[in-house]
Image (cartoon, rainbow, N blue to C red; front, side):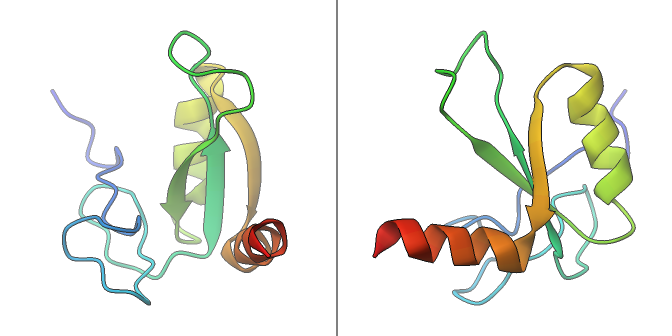
Length: 92
C-alpha cells in the first residue's frame, strides 16, 4: 500500500510537468509551491558528500522530513531561496 504523501518529484529540474521556473512540492499529489529543500543521502547507495533533494511546501515539510529522518537519510532542510543562493554561489 502506498502512502498518500510519498514524494513523486514533480518539481525537480527535468521532471515531467516542470517548467524552467516551476518548483512544486514533492509530496504525492501535491501541486503547491515548494518553499523548502530537504537534502538527503542513502548511505547504502550514495557517497557521503552526495545530496539528493526533495522539495516541500509548508504543509508537507514536516511529514517528508520525518519520512527521511526515521531512515537516517535526512541531512539538511533549508529554504528553497537559500538552496538556490548556495547553488549559484558554488556555480559561479
